[in-house]
Length: 319
Image (tube, rainbow, N blue to C red; front, side, top):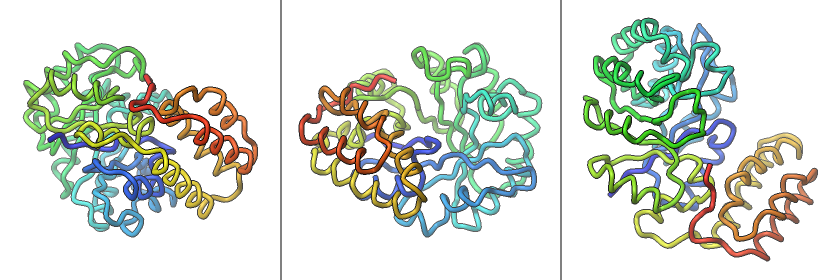
């Protein structure tokens, strides 16, 4: 049986979403938080702290993710997270965002191998928690990956989560399964796959190619079909009433903690960029959802979609 991780998606998969998802859907073994971006002194924004507070994540297996190229900041943050009760943290070496890469963080750190090695030396020698790494296969070319893999193999990395694209791909082009095969063959630590698993057929094809890999990380695929992980393990597709109830509770909870209709609408519209693809003939409805300026108009558009269109067995989302 495959293990499934829920990928961190900034702005979407915060603690309110995670808790609501967990109440309605099965199949996820571990959630990863959207990245924490500590200052050089390890300071975090109040919203970041709020997201990983243990009382906001009861009943969830959560791994906080850290995005930094400053070893002391990573260590201070990791120590703080350990005090909160987290036995593992995840280092983000995968974010392809231009603003992140320009600061030599995320995937941008992969191009600075000497700096990265000094960083890894320090955090693995001083941090008491387990450290996993989520990485891309390079900045510009898959030819960079063997050297990166050799570097990672020098440290007691608890798990290597590989998104087999380079930074300049962003989310275009197909994931490089040949590069991932290199990780499967040569990594000294457990390996997890991440990238473009949107349907049960995608997961089946991956499992057939890599029968020895026991863990995959799903992200956009779960937003497009919240039942994907359970469905891939033989469960029935999501029922419309359950999806409607999930949406209702999520909307109510955002209204409780966010100020103003605009902030609530922004959160919910982000979700519909993916979720709409689970409905037949969704286009005119999701267009109304995107254009809604009030919660009343938004809810009317959502209700019309649920009333007038059926759910598909698989999402048509393709990235």
